[in-house]
Length: 343
Image (cartoon, rainbow, N blue to C red; front, side):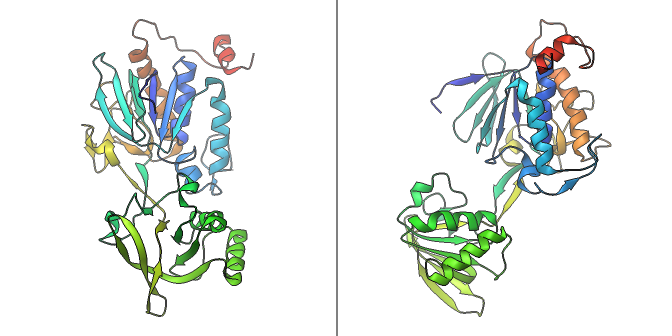
């Protein structure tokens, strides 16, 4: 980011189904939205955790998968041209001198907006870290939980740890470019696409990569640079493997993250809101979806859709304080239908 501040109407933190539907409701009111999400794809839990899992409780949609729901929401909001900022975590929330909210992300992107909607599900997705006391010394220098630039790993002695799609995808992608590469997994069963597993096993049989059944037991190196990893194999032996880059793909977990330090009223890790507009204790800051709590709260996508609709009505008043809010139906309003591109 070049340091330029992005001015918009509504910053939505979280690009899951509830955040996406908030774009639709905001768009009907003429509000421009930017969305921030830590994941590298749009869709939140639906896209990351259960893209192929069927969902049965979306009104008027008897059955759809998580990914199908996201695809339909993206089609619905396309007329409003939202801007997405993926692989970025919203780190700071503060009042700007002009009274707007300033949101700063981990990538240095800065937004200013009259309203902010937190639609971060159960929190931010963060990687499960390597459970070794010495791991922190190497993180970000030679131990990584994600690949931002694959070229940065070319020519290195790489160990990839994990048994899911991310581990298999990257071991296969990096294998042709690595000085050496090994895959370490605690058991000889994988949760990745069968074709990826088949290809990995073929390369292992050809000697193009090493497959080790075991767990990372220790790290060796200095000044943040790895020299080797110690692996405890399935039969209890310990093996030392030369390595200067370690990729650990142990899955994701959800944490409230920096949001916990923004001065919001919390209750057991969730953000307390009113039920009139799902506004927090900070005026102009809202929370919708699974991350918010109030009496009678149901953690359902359809509940989040309802919360998004009411939130946008109040957000409009912060964004357009001098304009009158007129409630209209999409079925009868030609103005709304023009916004949607149907007439």
